[in-house]
Length: 159
Image (cartoon, helix red, strand yellow):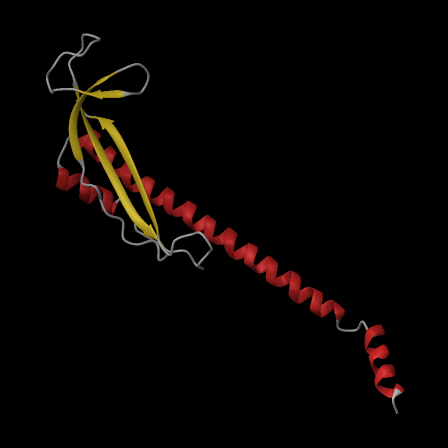
């Protein structure tokens, strides 16, 4: 009678019938975690693209129609619709108009409107259009906040 439990344990050690199911469960759970992470990252990246498109819509409106803070804000919020995983797109901070002189390359130095720049040209008028929204990840991840602010600003010369 004492040998019976040891014989049953020996048979269980040699039986590999359910081993594949256990291995599959371990590997599948890791793969599902990676898949959800990849989807979450893709949706965050798409959120950045959507907010960038909205800010660009405000800049394009300003380039075509001039500066009007309310009209540019409307152009930003109506440039694209926010999908379910992204909060409503807002024009935040509000569109601004300012004057500046273009330095070397693409840098712009703030200047008084109608003043003369170092290169001899008059200071130009620029408009900055900004869009922002909040992305909520599918899952909570270690080190990642529960919501992620997504924002983009574009500056365009209008005069």
